[in-house]
Amino acid sequence: MAAAAPPSPFVASTRRFAPRLRSLLPGAAMSSAASSVPNPSSGSGEEAQAPPLPHSTLEIAGARRGLLSGFTSLRAPYRAFPVLASNRHVETIFAAFTRSLPAVKLRRECLRAPDDGAVALDWVAGDDRALPRDAPVLILLPGLTGGSDDTYVRHMLMRARSKGWRVVVFNSRGCAESPVTTPKFYSASFTGDLRQVIDHVICRYPQSNVYAVGWSLGANILVRYLGEETDKCPLSGAVSLCNPFNLVIADEEFHKGFNNVYDRALARALRTIFKKHALLFEDMEGEYDISKAENARTVRDFDEGLTRVSFGFKSVDDYYYNSSSSDSIKNVCIPLLCIQADNDPIAPSRGIPREDIKANPNCLLIVTPKGGHLGWVAGDEAPFGCPWTDPIVMEYLENLQSEKNSSTKNSTPYDQQGISEASAPHLTVHVQT
Image 1 (cartoon, rainbow, N blue to C red):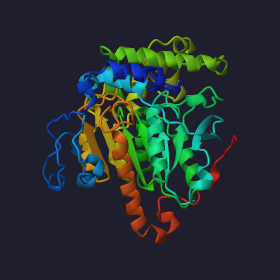
Image 2: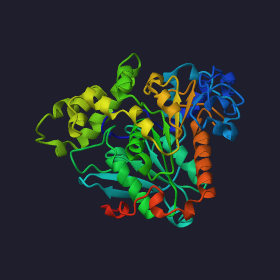
Image 3: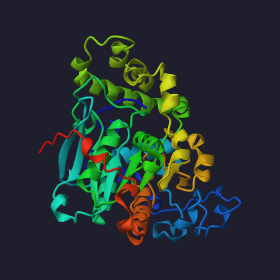
Image 4: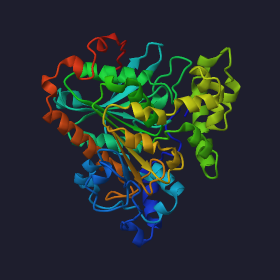
């Protein structure tokens, strides 16, 4: 819910912490145990007639929920990893500190925005030559302070790459050492940079179907973009993970109990990135409170002093209310899968726009009983491997790609594929090699 910051303060080396933490777990915890909760998604009409999953550990809603019944990745119940899953904060922090970080060589490309700001795109080195020009492209949007060096991003990148997909990580202004060239970072409301990135990718690979996956704040920005584009959206599908959806509710929860730990840590990270670029903000006039941002003890302080002013909001509450992606769901016109954890401390379950998701035939919702925030320490690769969500996300995207390949897309006029011929060439692009 704020401007950019350096990599998450919770990220640490798996090699350093994993062996020690693994040794602390009792033997029984090293085997998965299924957790079962009632499935509240049952209802009337078309949704209720969809083939059920062979278990009821997930809350599932949406007109296309029957699609999931054929997913190999969902044949087994949701298996929350013992001990860790007993507390949402333990699971959240454990995943951030100990999840493995797959090694991959990346190539960076920087785009210059119309306001002279810049974002960084990290592509897998060598894939431009190794993959066919029409290989599907997946754009990854990390959460607040996140980037291509985050473990959950790397795992998704490696899984998609292993399936023959071209993958690129969109590092927002200031994230993952992305350059900051103007006195403006990014926000939960701002979709301009994402729009430019998508146009750039489509212009470069016009024969490919392009998809996007976003986590946390990145998911909020992605869903807002989908709602703004409506039926003109050029993406072929999208996935939203750990989306806070309603930022007013998320802000309320952020200041309760142990959540203050996350708040203080993120505020510290925001102060750090701000101080690295403090000279850009010298002599800022108007409603800016640079001192408040520079000394912010909470994310809300930082947003009040800087973010909400940069993006033209009257107050921080006005910023949160008008930057939520919950109101965008009803305008989404492409396939969208939303996956949330019922016990997420940062993206509260009560903020999920369940009724709008059910009413939109393009949307599908999965809510797991456990998972924390960006945790999902469950499944065959728990506790140190990929999040439980990765196989489901990949199977969903492959299903969409298969539908695209079997359709009459190749015979459809270019201007009816959701891409405007006039929209692609207007980019100002600066490339760093």
